[in-house]
Image (tube, helix red, strand yellow):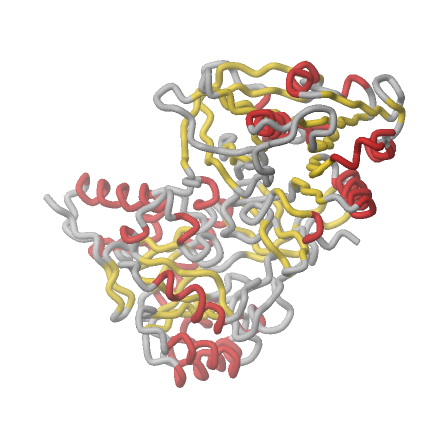
Amino acid sequence: MKKYVLDLKLLGVEQLREGYGLLRLTDAKAPLPEMSAGQFVEVRVDASAQTFLRRPISINRVDREHNELWLLVHAVGPGTRRLCELAPGSVVNVVLPLGQGFTLPKAAEARGADAPFSLLVGGGVGTAPLLCLGEELVALGHKPLFLLGGRSSSDLMQLDLFRELGEVLLTTEDGTAGERGFVTQHSVWASPSMRNCRFVYTCGPKPMMMAVARLCREQGMECEASLENMMACGLGACLCCVEDTVDGHVCVCKEGPVFDTRRLKWN
Amino acid sequence: MNSELTTAIASLQLQNPVMTASGTFGYGLEFADFVDLNSLGGIIVKGTTLEAREGNPYPRMAETAQGMLNCVGLQNRGVDYFCREIYPKLQGLQTNVIVNVSGNSPETYAECARRIAQLERIPAIELNISCPNVRQGGMAFGVSADGAASVVRAVRAAYPKTLIVKLSPNVTSIADIARAVEAEGADAVSLINTLMGMAIDAERRRPVLSIGTGGLSGPAVKPVALRMVWQVYEAVKIPIVGLGGIMNATDAIEFILAGAAAVEIGTANFIDPQVTAKVIDGIRDYLQRHGIGSVRELIGAAHG
């Protein structure tokens, strides 16, 4: 996919919860380029002293009808905080689309109760790319099943949008929403319907993704995980964001961020 | 008036003074969507060693005030892989493709250089005697005049084309090192490689980088780099390639005025993948604005 450097216009930042901003961006001049779920965007902050490098942010949603790109930003440091504080109308310079996204299954054939489905497992801000993935799966005629987890019900974001795409299962550590516990402890994993699960996609904190990958291995399911190693260039040039794989150190920004978990040395 | 952008590094002709620094531009191909690679003065590709290297563990990068630290540690798949898999993809480029060469002994440097000398479309190598991120070799050679001389002597005997030696700033007198490599027959020097530094995570109370220390690059190092280009210009007769924190055309002009015949752009490629093209345009504008016929008139011009 061809990559671009674009000046996008910020339509607004919606604070989904304390410390999380949803940036809605548009290109006033042209349709947004082709991009796919799991890919990411390198966002320029301002290259000032403490926010020198771009920030890699996953694609939350591409709304073709309104020509909007959505980025869900967790304000963890000065750069992401500044992005969440930008005023509507600001110009946001982005490099996109970057990396390899999720592998989509072939267009669905079977339908009905026994139709194969994909399980999308997200935690925290890691749910962001799963919304985009869910939309792509639905467009292919697939039924995504979402399993989203957080410490508490207030951690769970964009639930209405997920519910428009498919069934949503929840876990919270404090039991304020869905089943109490971690995503890997949800009862769905033991349900007979899981035999129709073709694919598991996961994004979230690394320990969560490792646990999901382990569960998938035990149950004989393929699993793709989206990593978020610290990056500089986002283009495979600086070799800073490497992950240890069966093929040695590979750049998460170029060969990932999405990996077949069997390729990762997570044991 | 049409100002002339062409310059030269010894016998190597450049259509303009703007090259890309090793380790910041991949093999060039990674940036092909952003920049017309053939418009560059040169592309210095990723550091290459005789044998494949896995580099250092993650994390390898830390953002710092106006810059970044890295401890990649020369990850590459070895010179034979480069010759077999990468070179064919670069052969058609109409710019100078230069290979950055590293090693852990004068012999391995020389053997790596010998294999690259066979590649017709690679007119030069940049010898990296200044990598701060590998235990064996790398900077160990670049921090003493004798060490630097021993590597250049071995490579000079094995490599007939343009030999650029990349110098470390982590030394007491960079001019002494430059004189030593000039005496061994280097055609040019490039400077500076990264400055050794470190970052500590106050919350975790541990160093950020996997090996503790790393090389600092970006605008934070520019004044140091500029001073060193200035000093080396007064110490040697061979051409200088200047680098260290160049973010725009004005920065590049400053390096040329300090004595650089050409420049390399590194970390800035991460901030703006189109920066090289902008610097070339900016140098052209500068020359026209000042009524200067050729960029070569500016080399070392600040020395008076």
